[in-house]
Length: 287
Image (tube, rainbow, N blue to C red):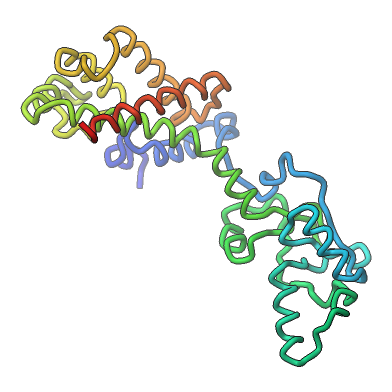
């Protein structure tokens, strides 16, 4: 499928993800370097030093480390190689099997760690595609990262969730602002007023949108500021709202279309606007 054919199906500003992928795949090499390709190694940023346990150490030492650090697993080292991981699940699994045989007593705390190893714990190269390991992490709860048999780090589901929260939160905040504004306008205008407001908006091809969800963010801004008489009770004074919406529009374009990073103050501004939009939208549901 050619690019111009896709652009007809997915207009810019309406399907930002598809648009971003198309832009990155057809742009020059310098622009392409800004595209985020997530690897397993990306999860290791800001992680504490790796804790391991030797295969010949007693399991009590592993449990002490796990309890002290609140870990659910530890990579197991034999010689210079990582042979797998000892986990709370692997410990309980072995104890359950041995208890069925009548072999478990207090002496199990002296058993070597090697007896409890989960040998299926996969060692992932830091350069591997992160998405390839999501299902493994969902099933096992962790992935060991390293080269060949040398362990470099261990990442858990918590690290994965935190990583994606950091990467996606700005998109979700901006999307919620837009969703709330559409809801507020839809609840504040009558069907006739909304139809008239939509008719006043002209798209690039000269036609009027038939639904509020068809509006781009800037068209939504124009609708709000162009129908102030009907919407002034929902917002502050018109000039201030227009300035805020223009700022959000520009930040939105930077994030959605150019994959640009926002500053700490810009992020705080977006979050404050989003929180205010939610409160205003909620007030519409309880009136």
